[in-house]
Length: 141
Image (tube, rainbow, N blue to C red; front, side, top):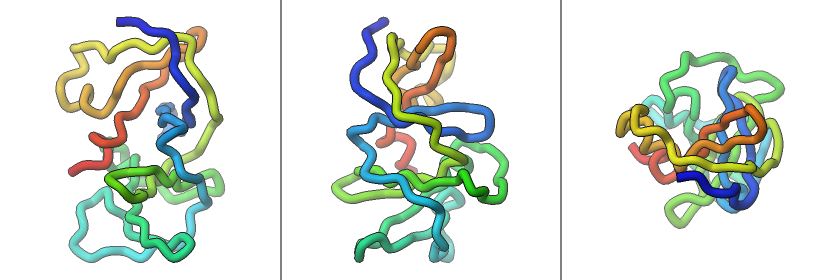
């Protein structure tokens, strides 16, 4: 199933990999401020932060996908997304650009159920392929 690219995406980086989030689901992108940790929270929940009076849980996409942890850099950002009637922050290594894709294909079935659950498709621009994140699945559990 191949379709023409629909809408715009924010392309983010984790290590050498690129992922894309639909721009309609992004509230804002901020630098990484100090987080208040939550004792006993699951590994990928790095804490909470307060943005304009609202407490926002912050998850690390690197931890969620099983990448080893690294120190935050000047390029590290928190992408605040709309989720479950509120907002949630996602820590990414960097934000590359706002973009659209010429073609979007369904993830191949060989990825398996767990990996396929995280992605709505694969965006293609020229020879470059980027996994399009399914935020509901990524942010659950």
